[in-house]
Image (cartoon, rainbow, N blue to C red):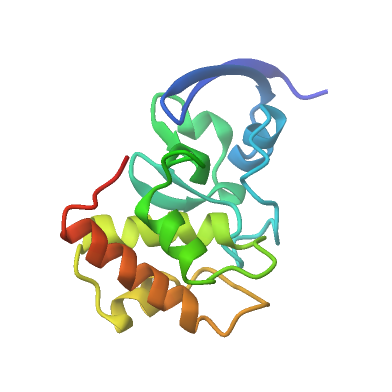
Length: 162
């Protein structure tokens, strides 16, 4: 049996503690701690469904070991906003009909947040490149690209984040 150790993860602004073996991925640890908004897709870094922000950088949590996130800020899509105070990206996706089944959307919104944080005025090419690690099987991506551009416009206009 692999040795386990207690790890404290800072998730969405709160410290959460769990016991994990050294080989436990951040995806597995997050889901073990109840963060079901982080989706388990391919488990090999191809789909982006499990994307989270790690100190502001989008990473595939299926490729990141849990202990590597200790001492860093982990942000899931739930950490961006909620029903009462949605993040401009969450609002734009809902208002623009950018989600169909919704499975990939948490990871896409996380990637979109990283895109806009890096470049507040992304071109369509910037958005396409930034989302190149995220797969969606339901949409044609057009509404997703439009929602990200709309959210970036809102954020630049002072709509900001909650």
